[in-house]
Length: 110
Picture 1 (cartoon, rainbow, N blue to C red):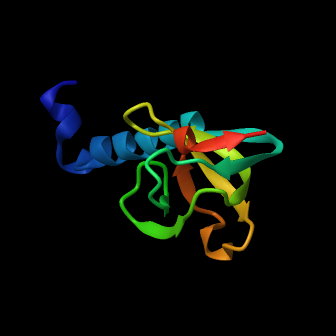
Picture 2: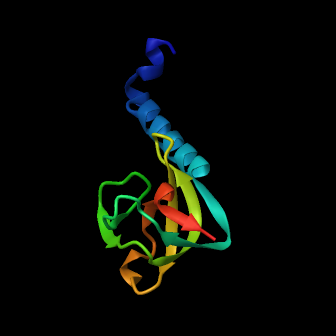
């Protein structure tokens, strides 16, 4: 782009466009629906409760789940580091976990 493209009438436009494009690209790539809600169980080999996060790779922890809890998984997504996450549609006895995300490697589906 030439310097004129960044003139007074275009201030910030490129950044807003880039941000919007990145957000749309992330949403388009991220979520893959599970087949008719996969049934899974928490099987964290460390034995510690599994963190349920607000988003794939997110920092906010909504709840924790002990091993053995049965989950209904509604979708899968990869975070920026390529780790696979599963969205919880339901967790037997743990309603606060619904809508949260767990690392796929710590659940076994059947």
